[in-house]
Amino acid sequence: MEIVFSDYSKNFIGHGFLAVDFFFCLSGFVIAYAYDGRIEKMGLVAFFRARLGAGARLTPGLKRLCVFSGKISYPLYLTHYAVLWMFGNYYGTHKPGTG
Image (tube, rainbow, N blue to C red):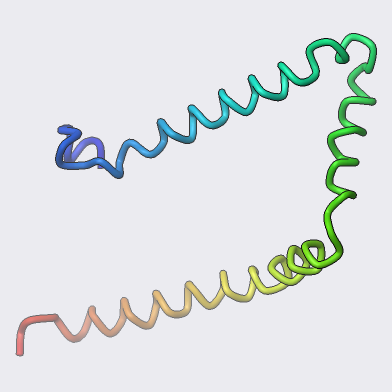
């Protein structure tokens, strides 16, 4: 998109990657600030244990939701390609606007 529309006023969605970069920088700063005093005493293994242990505090309902969405994501992924193939074949043989 950046090659086609180089003017920001015509393509405001195409610069969304900047927001993602900013989010990663900001979250890295927040984690570094939170562990600044403790990181020297903790060590690398204890740090990762603390981060992975934070996931154990999820509520059981949220855990079930995560497992359910993980189980249905792959079938939806495969269905996505079948639907795209069907529409691609249909529009390949029936040109829109030709009557």
